[in-house]
Amino acid sequence: MKDFSGKIAVITGGGTGMGRELAIQLAEEGCDIAICDVSTTNMAETLSKTQERAAQGVRTTAYACDVRNADAMNSFAEHIKAEFAVSHINLLFNNAGIGGGGSFVEEARDDWERTFNVCWGGVYNGCRTFMDLLVASEEGHVINTSSINGFWASAGPAASHTAYSASKFAVKGFTEALVTDLRLNAPHVRASVVMPGHIGTSIILNGTGSDDPQGARTVLRMMGQPIDEMDDQEVKAALERLGEGFRDRAPTTAEDAVKIILAGVKEEKWRILVGDDAFALDAAVRAAPEEAYDIDFSGRLG
Ligand SMILES: NC(=O)c1ccc[n+]([C@@H]2O[C@H](COP(=O)([O-])OP(=O)(O)OC[C@H]3O[C@@H](n4cnc5c(N)ncnc54)[C@H](O)[C@@H]3O)[C@@H](O)[C@H]2O)c1
Image 1 (cartoon, rainbow, N blue to C red):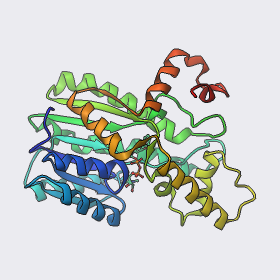
Image 2: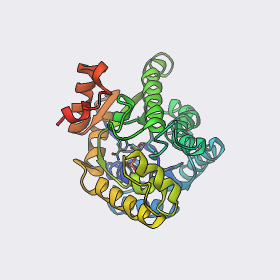
Image 3: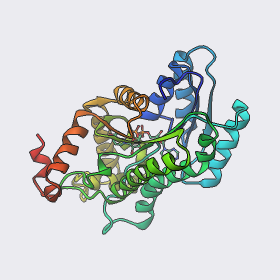
């Protein structure tokens, strides 16, 4: 797809971060935008920023839904068809995601499955719900957000990272298989997997909610923070510090990440790495896969 003007894009997790930036930059290029998220407040802000910068005539809509819920996703699709009076879409960005679910050994099943079901289940539900509408278009593209954790199942030697990594490997494997499936059965629709490195967003702050001390403990433990002696107030403050640092000291901004993603879609790349850190890690894992989980592996990346 060389031109987004006059197209219709669906973006999950459009409330903040890369989802919000996708909405803004696509609308600037003349693309109609439909976002969903669990946060209506954040979606309202996204729509307002999107409308400020949208090309003339661009339509926008938002729908509150949880990507884990297949019925809710179907209602989102019905909402778009009614709102835009269409029976197709051109672009589907399965972008919604959360962190958490670090240790399979230590953590509760619910915490683990929450992360897996948002990060993998959301992509699966998005594709299930919208595939017919993509196939009904003249030109379609599905873009599934995985991560560097889709090819390296680690957050470094001090942290367990099982649910997120498992989900992102699933997203990568599924999307790679879709490339051939679409070529055989719907060749006017493409698929891409996005693998960002560290991008400056609020994903750590959004993922648990600072009102959820248990969730905050899960994330901090996953990041190798010494939390055993901390009370809930200290845990909350530590999470905020960690989340703000993650957002503000990233090598790539959400805005730049989305420029890279949209350029990759236009170039019809099925594999879109985002950030120098993602390229360096990809090269290192390919060069020495047996060493990828050595204790000093990430230290060797520099
Ligand atoms: N930020 C990074 O460093 C990074 C790196 C690699 C991959 N990613 C991936 O990029 C994607 C976007 O993340 P981001 O960094 O922009 O974070 P973000 O937290 O800013 O955006 C994610 C959005 O998804 C929404 N969301 C969460 N759970 C949801 C659910 N159940 N249903 C609907 N919406 C939900 C959140 O409310 C939020 O608006 C995610 O899939 C994430 O895993 C991020």
